[in-house]
Image 1 (cartoon, one colour):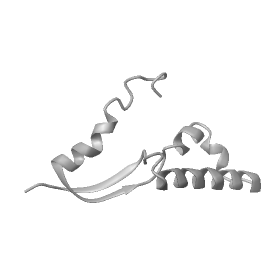
Image 2 (image 1 turned 180 degrees about the horizontal axis):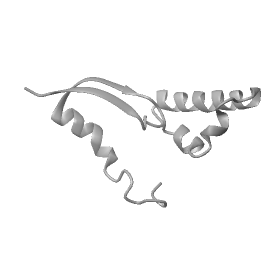
Image 3 (image 1 turned 90 degrees about the vertical axis):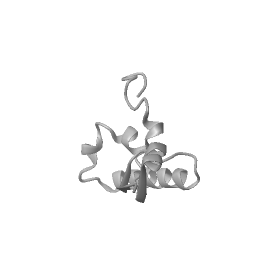
Image 4 (image 1 turned 180 degrees about the vertical axis):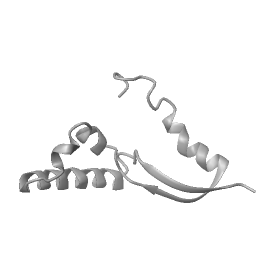
Length: 87
C-alpha cells in the first residue's frame, strides 16, 4: 500500500485512540479485512460462485485471518463503531 500510494492511511493508527479520546464508545466491532482485502482485492469477483476448490481456499483464508486476529498477531482493518458525544 505504501509503495502504491504513500498518502493512503498515513494516520490510520491514530483513528481508534482518538475515537476513544473524543467520544464515549458504546460499541466497537472488528470485521477483519487485514489479509483478505489484500489477498482478494481486484479478484474477489472470481469467487462469486466458487467450486469446491475455491470454497476451500476461501475457508482457509478466512480461518487464517480469524486465527491471527484472535492470537493478537494482526488487528482488524475494518471496524464499525457506535459512539456518543461526551457530556
